[in-house]
Image (cartoon, rainbow, N blue to C red; front, top):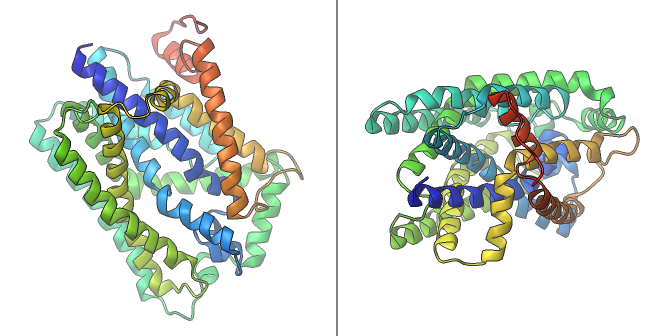
Amino acid sequence: MDTGEEGEEAGILIMLGVTVFGLLFANMPGFAHVWAAADLLPLQTATPGPLDSLAWWTGQTFVAWVFNILLIVLFGSALTLRQHSGAKSGLGWLSLLGLGLAYLVWYGELLTVMAIAGMIALPMRALRPVTRWASLVALVGGTFLIVLGGIGITALLPDTMGLPDLLGLDEARIAAIEAAHQSGFWARLPHNMATALQFHLVEFFFLGGGVLGLLLLGMELVERGFWGGRWPVMPLVISAAMALGIGLPLSGWSAVQALSVSFAPSQAWEGLVGRSFAALLMAYGYAALVVLAVRFRIAEPVQLLFIRAGHLWLSVYVGQIIVLTLIFSGLPGMGLFGRLGPAALFAFGFALAGIQAAAVWLMDRYLRLGPLEWLLDGFENRRFARLRR
């Protein structure tokens, strides 16, 4: 691997490390509450306190959707580096892992759709650069238009229809779902499987093109030396400032919209459209800031932690899913599903982030690879290397 590719790998690993910590906060509300109540505070409680409102607004503004986008882009970048090094992709085994997670643990995993999109994206690298760029713009833009069209339907609904009626989630329905999750993991397994099937249908038929486009974008960023800091500094600074200067206020405004108790269906499309556009801008802004921090060697001890987490990203990501499932709905009568408000959940997230950092340090100290990285590489190569250092 030449110096340029080493720089790309370091940048990707650091950004992957940042992303798996961001995903902890981004995904935790989906484990802790009914999915719509996680994104619409009035469905959790009609009278949230100031701390709950602030914590929920902070999470929705700074992390929701953004780190899921970054994970997909970085996965495409990592696939490109693996192909450059001659390593096998392991996409078939990764898709099986994702299917097992989705149908047996948590429906919101991204591994399955990323693995299948990767199987399509890798052969597309043989296309001419202009064709690849035209394809990724069309895929991402087309998916955005599909989402926009689906959201726009809500603008046609009367304001007399409340959000609980629109989503089919009145107080009785939410209470029933919470009781099912609190009864334990195995008791809700059939419901989880049905929900996972619904999510996969949505991901493949409506969002799959966007995932493929983002993977292609990640591949193109490697080819152009983005993660290795080879882009000029001033364009990076200016573009990051513009992306965050537009994305953060737009995301914050969208979160304020969703805080309103009188949030009407005919107004819902405004906030959701703003959130979709803001998430794309913020994903680029965060990535550019990390690239600049790496280039100027800012907070190098923290960067080292993120590099370690990046090496273990798959094990950390799957570990998050399993641990959060156990905490919120694993044991009958002891799960925290539906029982933590946004402020308590926010504080709990910081405690879990500290535990995750300690786990990353221990795994990196004693293991050559993450357990799942080692397992998938062994299956793919039909030979298991030594795991311990």
